[in-house]
Amino acid sequence: MDYGGGHVFIVLERKWKGTAREDAFMFYGYDHGLVVADFTDDGNENDGATVLNLTTPEGFSEAVPPHIYMNTNYATTKTDVWTNLLA
Image 1 (tube, rainbow, N blue to C red):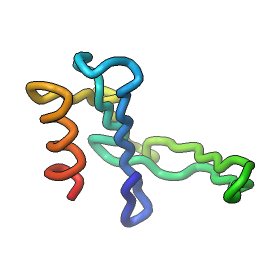
Image 2: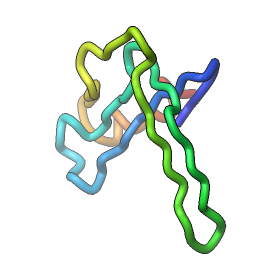
Image 3: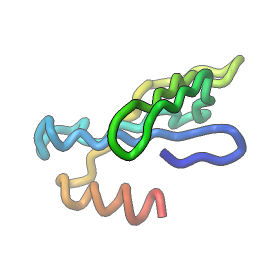
Image 4: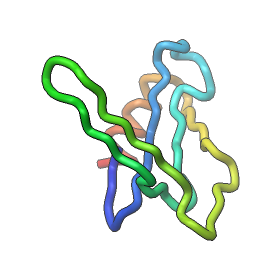
């Protein structure tokens, strides 16, 4: 997750579904970002969980949630997303 100004943007890498899928990378909050509605941190190094509930900011909506992205192939897309788009 990347955040700023109270809004977060989520990029989910779905490698476990296969590297040839067009929805290998899914962007949540692409249009307006998301806000944290509820946060619980019971996590530590060994067990527990951190739970985030995210929602679109009040008065806004996402045109196409989630936005999917695939550029040529999985390896190229991974470089585009993690190096070029989110750097």
